Length: 138
Image 1 (cartoon, rainbow, N blue to C red):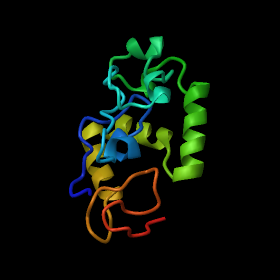
Image 2: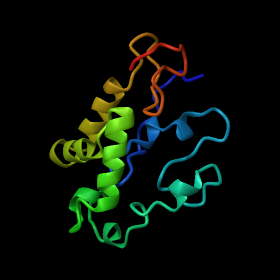
Image 3: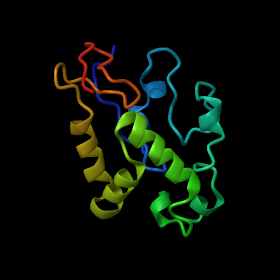
Image 4: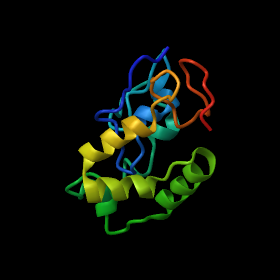
């Protein structure tokens, strides 16, 4: 199923690595990420995301929420809490890494962090097992 890591260019303004999303990783009708607004494969909740469509975000130079005058907004706090609780990933930690160490560093660290220890395929943040070999990683 998944033979490669698919991360580059898929970092959302909130710090989500869309390359880890099960919607992007699925074989049939994969989502193309947050920045493709007319993607018919994108779930409605993602198409209408208040973070991606935020007026304040449009005024930032970086395109990331950490630069917003309302950072951290309630929407981002809720998103971070849900992902920390359910999936062991923090939007705030991701954004801090991007801000302090740069996007290139973040992408490299994500490739290592989200690589199956058994077969080397890319993992999904939304699953507790490798989609390629079934290895349980959480």
